[in-house]
Image 1: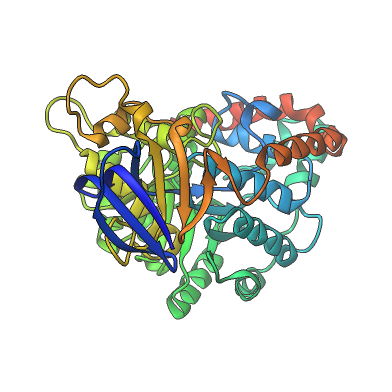
Image 2: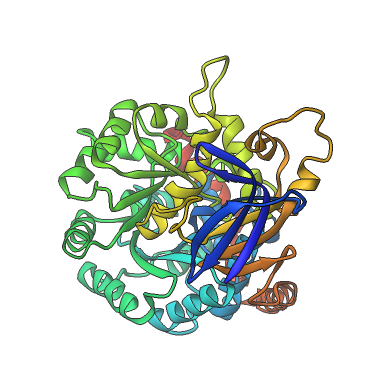
Length: 473
């Protein structure tokens, strides 16, 4: 049994002064009145509903400022390292930033072993850190380099650069039935005890109809959730309109993919009729404000999504504003970008809190039961209220203070299923500073693994711009 005292207890639509929480068997057992003096603000742990357990930040390997399609090849510059180490660092940073649950759309495979073995290492890292993790197995079988006219794209490169691009990015895909079967094999290996497994189609531009239809069929048969990218960039919007003039979302609906089991990341270029269809089918949209800005993708119509009834969640996508996995700062950015202008806000503070907690948890686990009531999971974030409120001169609502100034520096603790995975601002399950140092050493030592790609990256970046700009925004 654990007790937490709070000067403020913050739930959805409710703020309570001076409370004591009793945690037992992974849940909130009781909430009672308590005296002041703890100096804590307690709220549900945040949910990072779209991420990749990625090992490097944009500034480490180049590509800063590149639009999405030109930036993606920079990910391949990352050397292969121990998958447990990479995932433990990624999950540890997320916990330190205030997240209790993370969606790991596992698109960056280290490749040192077979996929199920690597997935076991990632799941072990999640459990060592102590987070709830949705592990989405990446699935793709189309358009490995660009969305259309790949021969034209290769022709823009020198013969040597084109050979590197073919070898690095254009390997034959595994047949669709084998990919889908691998998801079930991975689930049999790692699911349970905080880890759930999802189908993770990379995105409609990277998946054949056959693969998407098979994913939809298996999801309906098993209840397994699906997580994928959707209309992140202007180039993807143009591709969708060219490839599916009758409507990309209508196509996905005909394939059976749109349902409450689906969450989609980004949705920057969604149109009103598409938003209505997503709302009607119960699809969750995960917005990623920092990533969308950093990759020149745009600003998602989140206010319109909310007003039309879409369940919206928040994600960091491995691209937090200051490359620091700070989920609290990401909340503030989403608030400032999407609340609307003038006196009729599109999103209220309470709605934003729901987006950052219960909605994200639903996308990751299929369970929306995040809250501040007896019986709810003991997934809790404790902030330093004394520091947050040190300059107040009026009795300001605690959620307003949080949205104005809270950052990861204010995180005292994160509890997941009653376990303190962060205490005193430090991750408890692993020695995160030591692992970060070990990871950086390994990445620098493996730099020669990607020397061929590094040599042609300037050509690739220019070629992507020349190839995609006419069909971009």
